[in-house]
Image (cartoon, rainbow, N blue to C red; front, side, top):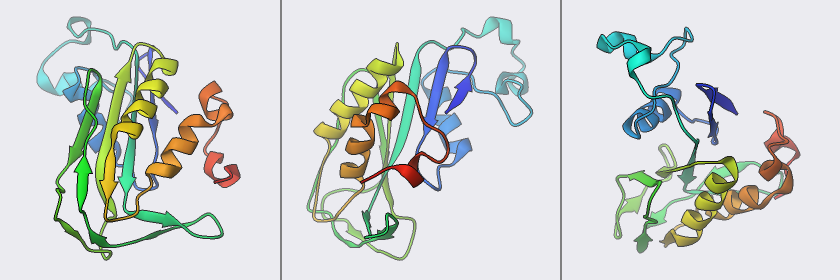
Length: 173
């Protein structure tokens, strides 16, 4: 977990989550994020931090990958043709993707097919919103990490915020 400002907790899940890409998603939602040196990115725009509203709430992002879990808890990419692709929507829900029904997904490149981003006033509401968004997301024709994300969102330790960078090493899927 990474704190953004004093009020917004950000959770980035996925082994290749891009910090810059996630920061872009947050700034698109109206949030300022700390740069690598700890200062706000607003300075490069000629804006003083005092003129920027403070972040409110919690944002979570996860990668929906075209992967399956193996018997030792690792992941391996799969391939196939996306036959159905229905995306979640609603307040505080954003999906970034470039795939569509009929898209042939090759197993040789980055296995991500979508980024799912939610925002809510509290961590509990953000988790509930992410669970609802995962339930609404329909992907057929390929196997994805959606079942894994659902189990993580339902995990008691995760919900309590009782986790570390070793969470996935100890997580039983």
